Image (tube, rainbow, N blue to C red; front, top):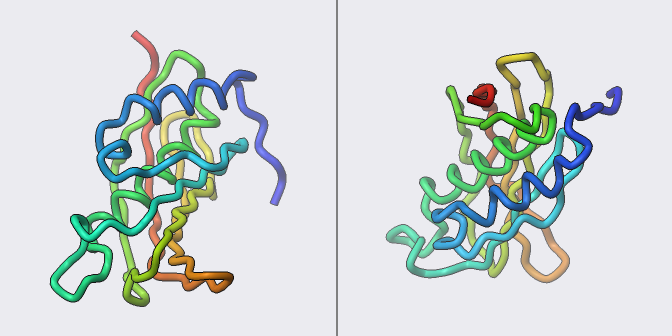
Length: 146
């Protein structure tokens, strides 16, 4: 795949500032680990407050982490004076999200002026073993600056 060329050379600073303002990421204890043009990774530790009845990370939290990673991946390619919002997404839950740590990855598949299509993945990480727990296909919209 051809590398993406962001229109904003300071995209990483903008993305990290935005992530710092997200209440949901703060609440989940999620951190923005990696930011490259067209790609973003979030990490989070397991917290029983966000589990479902069997002790697995709740599907809503799994989805939130992937949605945020996809949104930030798309946002890396958007102009400086813009915002990003989710338009739609589809999630497949592949295996229970269990373990001490999680990584959500978002990658741009197709970037357009208004809409950007991304893929998301959530991995559980235990010791050196990673398990793919969920995948997402998401569409993000660029809201141009006021």
